[in-house]
Image (cartoon, rainbow, N blue to C red; front, top):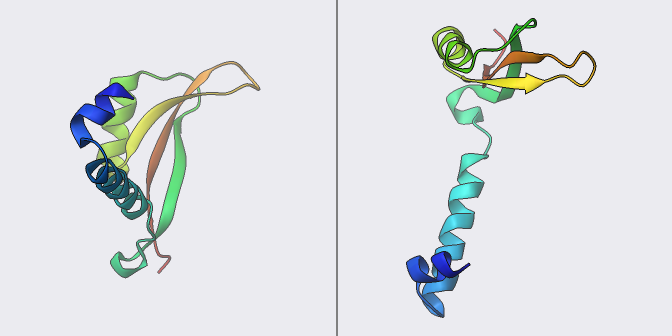
Length: 90
């Protein structure tokens, strides 16, 4: 908490900083209907294994998204999962 106080100051500056952080957070998750997107989609790119750089590259190339390794509790294997913005259905 000390680092936040040093960056944002005390009193009114702290309140302003927290409000600004909340605003940025809200805007980051706001619906994107005006841009033609309905939300976030996921797609499993590789069900057998996950190499982080390869997963991220394939996801970005195919969907302009963010690839991550996700662990499945059912089979204990890491899978490459792509998170991307869903376009509206034609």
